[in-house]
Amino acid sequence: MKIALIGYGKMGHMIEAIAKERGHEIVSVIDQNNPDEFESNAFASADVAIEFTTPQTAANNILRAWKAGVPVVCGTTGWDVSEFRIKNYELRGDKIGLLWSSNYSIGVNILFALNKQLAKFMEAYPEYTPHMTEVHHIHKLDAPSGTAKTLQEAIGDDRLKINDIESIREGEVAGIHTVTWDSEIDTISISHSAKSRKGFALGAVIAAEWMKGKTGWHDFSEVIS
Image (cartoon, rainbow, N blue to C red):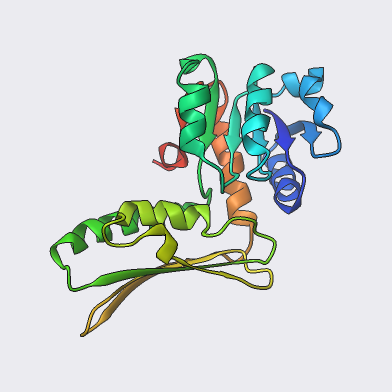
C-alpha cells in the first residue's frame, strides 16, 4: 500500500517505521516546510494519507488531501471535528473519505468501551461522583486531551463537565487516563497508561490499511470491531 504522511514529527517518524515494517511504501512526506507537496503526483498516488499535525492546520490539510483525491486517517486532536464534518463533509457525502479518532491505541479503545459500560451502570448510583485525570508530555498542545474528551462524552455533562477534567503536563509521558467514581464508602477506578507512542502509531497504520479503497466518515471503533 502507498501511504502519504502529513506531519513528520515524532509520531510521523514512528508511523513511517511501522508502515515500512508492515511492507508499505511511503510515497510522500509533508511538513510545514513543503506544503506544495499536496499538489505533487507523488502525493496523489497515495492510497491513504495519515495526518498527525496541529489543531490549527488539521482541517486545511484534510481538505487539501481530499482535493488530491486521497482519503485521510487523522489523529490530530484539539480542533472542532464536528463542525468540520457539518461544513465540509456532509455536502460531499461518499465522494471522499476520513477516519478520525481521538486515540488509535487498541488498549485505549478497550478503555473507551469499559468506560461507556461503567457510566451506564453508574446511572443507578447517584451517590458516586466521577472524576478524570489525564497526564501527557509537555509538548502536547491541547488540554484536556482528545481521549479525555471522548471519555467525558460517554459519562455526560450532567455528571462530569469537560472543565472539571484535571490535565497534567510533565516530562515525556506518553499518556495516562484515569476515570474514578468516588463515594463515601469506596472508590472505583479504570485507567490506561501508554508505555510509548508506538501503540498509537501502530493503530494509525492499521486504520490506514482498513481505510484503503473506502470513502465516507469513519472512526477507529469500526476498525477494531
